[in-house]
Structures are given as structure tokens and as C-alpha cells.
Image 1 (cartoon, one colour):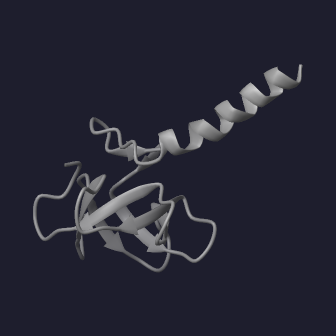
Image 2 (cartoon, rainbow, N blue to C red):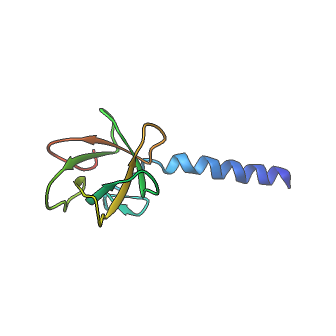
Length: 106
């Protein structure tokens, strides 16, 4: 009985890191969240935790002032977001790289 509980606990712990950074390129989603649109940076209770990197991103992000209608296009807002993100230095759900052209899944 204890062995079964230990195995289940190990599976639960091992499942979390495997899901991190797995962007669905067909739908441009992660954990059911669209990766484009109006984005708000928050300090707590985010939809996703995001780390900005210089290389090997999960998503290339282009910041726009209007029409965030394609994968990787983010319009930063302070109210009524489609997605709330918290910028972190470690243990992100998503690693992004800011670009000026060709946003989306690399």
C-alpha cells in the first residue's frame, strides 16, 4: 500500500515539469490558454508564469499596439486582458523571446 502511494506521488510530481513549455503549435495554446491577444502583467494569480529568454524560447512574442490577432502577437494592457502573465526568473510555464518580426512558435 505504501509503495503504491509512493509511486502515485512520484507520478504526480513528475507530471508537472513535463507539461511546462509544451506549446500546441496548431492552436497556439498552452494549458488551454491562447498565446495571443491582450495581455496583462500581474504580480499574483496569473494564467501563466513567463520567463523572458535570449535563446531557445517556447514562443516568439511581438508586442503590438493594435490587432493582436495572430500567434505570438501581444498587446500589453492594464485592464480586461485575454491572458494574465507573471514574469518570473525561474520555473516558468512558458519561455518567450521578444522579436520585432515573425512572432509565433519557433
